[in-house]
Image (cartoon, rainbow, N blue to C red; front, side, top):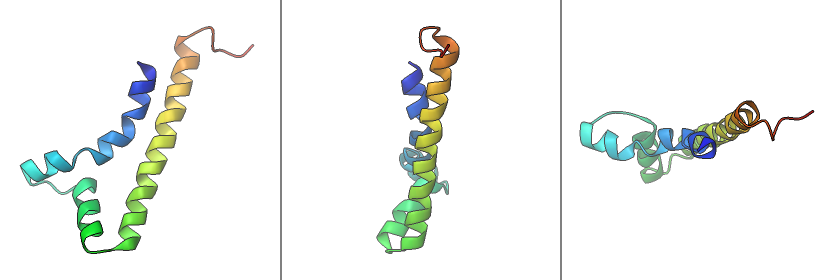
Length: 76
């Protein structure tokens, strides 16, 4: 369960494209889609950097959550 919670952090940034399209909101999903469509490479790289950072932070939080919640994982 902790792994799933840690890895959903990047999905928050990227899976919002459908919600953004339905409710006509501006967000990272729509910005990435328009950047890909218009071949705007700096915006694409910036959003990919944001998603990569969110993935690393989510995994780190999941590992910290394991250490806090599971006594078998703690270092002695």
